Image (cartoon, rainbow, N blue to C red; front, side, top):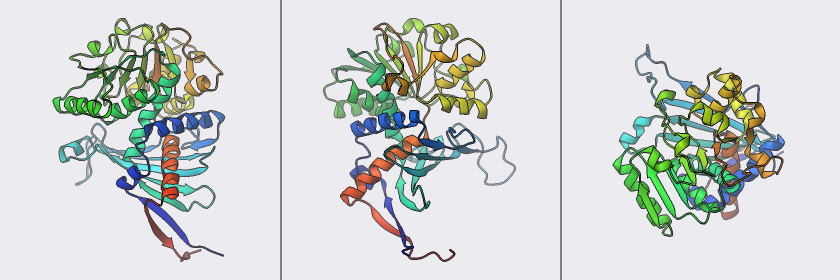
Length: 376
């Protein structure tokens, strides 16, 4: 009996060589993952099998020397999942997050991911996961744009020109080839300049890059509105978007949070989510009202459902649109809000795809776990 176990270590440069930044392939993987999810061939954390993950949140006033104090985005988090379909593997993304990292030139979050054999539990790969997470997060709005945006989409706005803004724009440009205008709303001069240079360098076909002074300016006349800014702690501080500013037929992709008028959310737009059961799980973990605690617009949808302001059938899943079970865009004037919550199955799908690319191309470093287990 061969009990030897080895696994593949993939650094960030290895991940890049293996195609982690291939957005076209990532969008395809996310679409396939969403359909697999819809079939039910997956397991995430919690008793409901749909938990986003488990996080360590530090106390507001630590009593012990050296223990961090709670701040915005100051946490550790484990995101385990099993994904079936063509992936058939388990894994977990683990990360620490501290917004102050940026002062040291580091990303806000530093992520690693382990992939495991679904039967033995043996490690298959340990990989740098910052790019896995960034690209899969952007690709989910890309799937939404493919199925929900108007076919004549010309202008995209990005509210929050950070990493998530870049990958979300990447994905939208992958699926909407007629985009000519990119509008940008940010807070810092450096982030605006960096984002502008990113667009100029990567997408020279873009005819107009417009820096917007206000959220209203960014929203008006945009066919796709991507809200990718870091959400403040309180809902009252979320960026406000009036329904009057939104162009008829616009798609609003939301991996982050914004404030809308209740009547507009209830009656003025179509509401689509990536996985309805994810929002049910959040509603259990963070009882009503959930939106301020989670900061993802799908939780506002379930809050409205709790209040009796919308019926359950008003909330669609994107996979229902992909498979043709329900209609997505029904006319050119329809405004659609698409909620993107982020799920560990996405990391399995994209991390697993890149891992197999690495195996096929001899990328990475093979590391031994043991020749034979010491305690078996």
